[in-house]
Length: 410
Ligand SMILES: [Zn+2]
Image 1: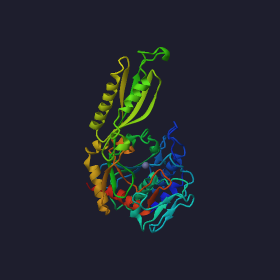
Image 2 (image 1 turned 120 degrees about the horizontal axis):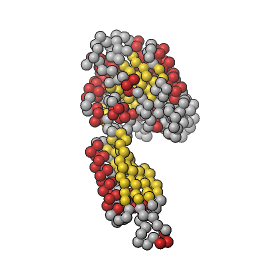
Image 3 (image 1 turned 60 degrees about the vertical axis):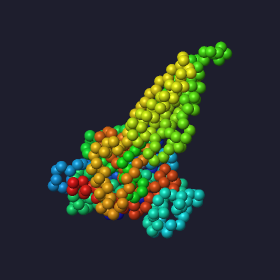
Image 4 (image 1 turned 30 degrees about the vertical axis):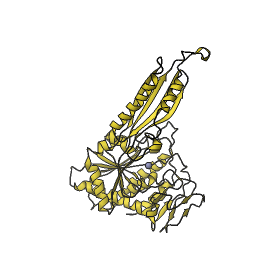
C-alpha cells in the first residue's frame, strides 16, 4: 500500500505557498504546478476524468465497481497549498528511518530541533520513520500528507478491483491556508453526497466539530467640535469605543482565558477619529445560541456605555462567518459512524474531537457537502519543525480504502 512516502517526498518539493495579500485565484499561480501534476498522475493511473479547472481545483472520479446502484457518492478532499507563515521554497525532506527517540537536529539550522516533550505526539513515534524538512523551510505535510494519502489510496483501489466501492470523488483545493479554499468550488460538478477532508493531526483522530463564528462591527457616531470650544458638547467616539473595550471581562470570554468548549468575544481591530470610531470583533462559540448570547452581552455593554453620551449613537452589525459542522453532521450520523468503523477495522482506537477554529469542511458542510476531518498524521504544521511519520501516513491510506468499502456495504 506504500507509494505514499514516495509520493509525499515528490509533492513537498513543489513550492505551493499561498498568499493572503493576493487578489487572484488561486492566490499564487505556482499552486497549479502541483494541481497539474496530480491530475496527470491520476490520469496515468486510469482516472479518465481527472482534470484541473480554471480556478486550479483538481476534480476526479474513481468509478464504482459495485453491482449496487444506491451507494452514496463520497469524496476525499485535501488542499495543495502550504502556509504563508514559513517559506515552502526548496523544501528538502529527510527521512529519519527507525527513529530511536533521540533529538532530531535539522542540518540547515541547528537551532531547529525536534525533541520529545516539546512536540506533541512525538513520543508515540519511536521505531517509526519520521519525515522532517531540513531546518530552513516548512515541510508541507499540511496538507501534502493528505494529498499523498488520497493518491496512494486511489492507486490501491484501482490496482485491487476485488475491493468493491461506489463512485469515489477526489477533490484537491487551492488556498485553504488563506481561508479561500471553498471560494470557487463547484459542488454540483463534484457530485458527491458526503465528504472527508484528510487534514487532521494525530493518528486515529476524527474531527466533527468546529467553532461557529460571527463577526461584529460596532460603529460609534460621536459629536465632534473644535476642541477649544468643546465644553459641554464634545462626545469623543474614540473614548466611547475605548470604554466599551475596557468593560470586557478580564478573566473570561477572551481567547487568552478560555479553552475546550468555551467561546469568546475577541476585538481584532479599532480605528477612528473623534467623530466616528469602528470596533471589529470576532465572536466564537460551539453553538449558535452561545454566539447570540455573547453578541447580546456585547451589545448590552455598548448600550450601557452610550447612556452617558446622549447625543452619540452606536450601530451594532453582526455578520455570519461559518457554523459548527456538527449541526449538519448530526443530520447524517452515518458519515461519522462509517469513519469510526473504518478506523476500528484497521486496528485504530478512534478519537473524536473538536477544533477551536474552522476548516474548509465547516464551509463545505453548510454548502451541502457534510464533511468531517480525518487524520493525515501531519504535526507541528506552519513551522520548520513540521513532521509526519511514514507509518501514520500508511495507516491513513488504509483508513481511506476501508472507508470506501464500508460505504459500499451499508
Ligand atoms: Zn491544512
